Length: 438
Image (cartoon, rainbow, N blue to C red):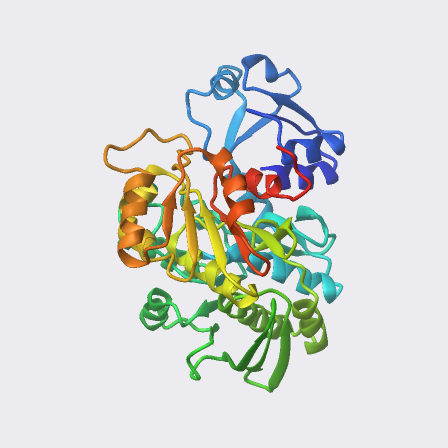
């Protein structure tokens, strides 16, 4: 929501907002001169408001939604407004169960590097600009296409990138087959599609659709249009060669993880379609500074012990993040995980249990409910027991305040600590700073 608010503010619209609490996004909006009320109350809807835009988290019984309807003010979902803005432009939409925020950020930096001045709406803050929005003056509009509530199907992209399709958001889709069908429809609507052929579900869709102007990428399959080989790792960075339909390109990628090499191949394909010169592509990937909460370095817990923070909240994301941590760490990887939503843990219990094998130690916190009610038999104690059946490295922690003293006592130089989750665990990543006295 904050990125669209900033974009419309720069275009001259008068923007107001409300949120349940103060946070970084609220502070950023206030710094721009945008008024943000804390709390949702009917009186927040003043007479000068012509449109109310709500996130998917806002329900019909919200007092401001009720007041808007009483005042005959049009109410749009966030994704409806995004579609109205996006579909007027040369839209580049990045979708996928995992990796879309990083890939959207890479696409944004690529077009900026090539002086194409895009507008971009991103699900996370690009480290270089410390913002989740880019307000350009060209016809290019880049958007992270969120599949969680089906809203991405309102977008009509000229170019669609899909990184992967995984079993998630079943509270909306009811079953995985419905989610796959939604992605299939999204791909059909694009003029050009860039698809990860390493993903089993996308590979099947490619065969079913037989879509013209479809470009594939892979780190495994040499039949893809764009594929990588000679991959080497050096700390956080990787070097590899990309085979394209025209030439081979030497790439240095400044963020760790095999999954990010895969994400970067989508950007190679995008540069091909847009005919962006390869030196712009190479510079983008070599100097990309990352996205906040995507393997973000926070501080040192103590001498030689680094603390990172990541948004990983799905088993596949956890596996990818821990692989990047292993690539980076000099010694042990110590993961602190806060599960997100009871329904997600319930539907993916077995997958979660198997996803921590690359961690040397796992500290498991209580489930972050995200507005959900508890489900009987679904809790972190049971999840910890299941994790230990596969990797025997998990300790359930019932009080988050115990974490820092334990880490200070048990960690040694070379260890890497990483907090993971989509809830409020990011606060802990800042508290683990050696200079923080809490």
